[in-house]
Amino acid sequence: MHDDGKSRQEIRFFGRRKSRPLKPRQRRLMRELLPRVRLDSDTEDALRDPRRLFTRPQERLVLEIGFGGGEHLAHRANEHPEWGFIGAEPFINGVAKLLTAIEDGNLSNVRIWFDDARRLLPRIGDETLDAVWLLYPDPWPKKRHHKRRFVNPENLVHIHRVLKPGGEFLFVSDISDYVRWTLAHVRAHGGFQWLAERPGDWREPPDDWPGTRYEAKAVREGRTPVYLRFRRA
Image (cartoon, rainbow, N blue to C red; front, side, top):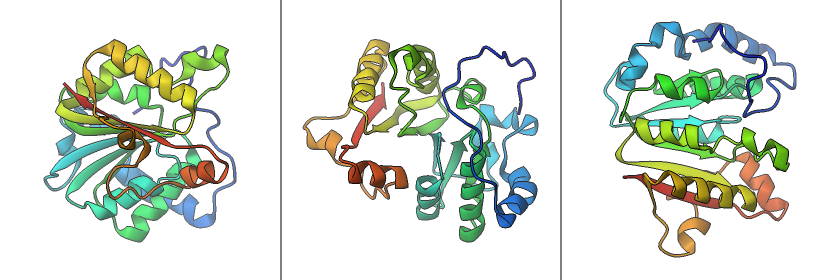
């Protein structure tokens, strides 16, 4: 699903689209598997009710924004075959890695939005998702780039809208300034309840947390991950 009216001056929330050349298997999966799991113009109507994206009923529907290499999403999809997962990622190498995991695990409960998640959120129907995950987004640390951070008033309006009442927005970062930024913006929105009642609630990952390669690197380098869980009011 592509937007022909894209402005060249449009603010980006991600960096480069591709780094290393794809391996032969990854190129094959981009040709053969991606068209079968990719959300495009043919799925426009189904996105209003994401349950229709899957061949069998799903107990829960989850969106992961910016899944990186896809290891967290693939782990969750393998762990919960009864859930439906939508992953949004514009980075070619990350999509290729997730496709490899989908083939290896024979996962039928994953769909991919191969583009900026801002173009996906407005297409999703109201109160249709059980959870939205935003894990280790680009922090855009320079002050002049803060406007590129994914957590902003406009995106929070959409995240709140697509979540069912009681649905969860999970934000994870190892950048303290972005954590403070997110808390301030979520509080300003007013439609979410922060679920932390004690320090351990934001210092400890959710149950059965598989982690990510980026998270392991952050810990090795002395940065502390923070897990912010919000419930949609």
